[in-house]
Amino acid sequence: ACKGTHPLDPSRSLKYCLVILNQPLDKCFRHLWHKAHLKACADGGANRLYDVTEGERESFLPEFISGDFDSIRPEVREYYAIKGCEIISTPDQDHTDFTKCLEVLQRKIEEKDLQVDMIVTLGGLAGRFDQIMASVSTLFQAPQITSLPVIIIQEESLVYLLQPGKHKLHVDTGMEGDWCGLIPVGQPCNQVTTTGLKWNLIQFFFSFMDRTFGIIAKHSVQPFLWFCVLETYLTFQEK
Amino acid sequence: MEHAITPLEPLLPSGSLKYCLVILNQPLDKCFRHLWHKAHLKACADGGANRLYDVTEGERESFLPEFISGDFDSIRPEVREYYAIKGCEIISTPDQDHTDFTKCLEVLQRKIEEKDLQVDMIVTLGGLAGRFDQIMASVSTLFQAPQITSLPVIIIQEESLVYLLQPGKHKLHVDTGMEGDWCGLIPVGQPCNQVTTTGLKWNLTHQTLSFGTLVSTSNAYDGSGVVAVETDRPLLWTMAVKL
Image (tube, rainbow over all chains, first blue to last red; front, side, top):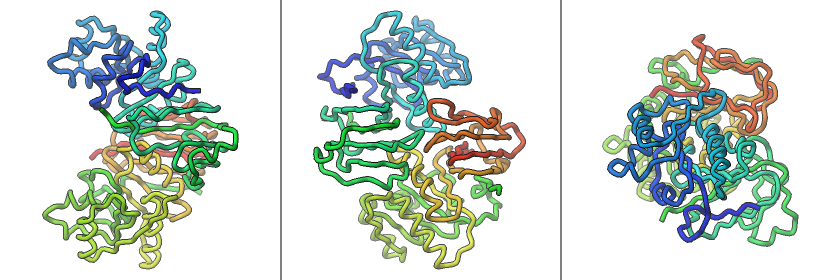
């Protein structure tokens, strides 16, 4: 079962690493930064960090910046290199900067023997459509890279991939917004059961056509049979 | 049978493609004005009417849709009133099992048949940004579209276009000059086990595209101006638009 604890909740003691992708940084970034046990940027994510921390850059130095460096600006790369951030080239064109950054991150976590619970990623859910899909694709590859849950947050959306099995998502931090959903990206999910949603599911196809209206707790008669990979997301409101 | 399409043909200033335009609830891009005037039928899905209203301030009477449909939980009351007064049909589609976009396509197809319109494509603006669940819902509508209309449905927002390739062979003409650098093939709904392409920088030969195995993103063109794709399952084509 997944912890489901929300990294944005200031009162929780969740330990996490932070990955910054190449998208505008949200307000929640500052709070997330200071509580993160390890911070990294994937390529152009460093540009975003550099620009949004003007005047206080020395308080926002990532442990490393990795990527094929076709996005990071030369002056940004130089700045962080001079400040002692590790600059790690990951030129492999068969994988995205995000995927490769997770690989480097996992290596660092092991080297430093860091006890962390989650990897929080900022960005990746807006901009070029192919890159949004690439972010989702990285979530599918993440279990081969790390055993830690990987979540992605951008603006008001959070995305998290549920592996086959049973999951309990605690959505009571107070930071949850109004909407949520389950998206069978990658393949149909033929046996889905939920409780706790406004419209609980007995069967769910990509066409969104088979939603079943349900009352909370009344549909827990069936065992939780999740035979496929799903994706769920919860909104949150920034404090 | 091979399907041929020039995805960016609607954007050509001199193009003769006949299309309908659907506006969803996202900021409207610059290309909207060009697309509007050449469209044979224009419609807004719910909050899409807000976007149209706001961006056409001062010249709203030149941008009146044939209809606005939806469950109307997004359209502002003054916007709805304005377009109603101006003679635009306001069509309530309250069914909560389908999105405003899906229901708008249904209404659109009905209108096309009623008016016996000869059109070649449905162009949708918006739907690829904002709330993640709504982006996915837009993609989901593309899966439902073949049950609603036989017309190809494309979605454009900012620099991205998406178009769902049904199983079979496709020729995508990418030589309008409006194509940007990147393109991709995304097996959104299920693995595509036999995918073959030509015309891309990184082509596929009877390969599997699947989340967790291989997803083609940040691909590019080989310069030939034509991309051929053969797929055994529905496969989402995405490409950059030079706006």
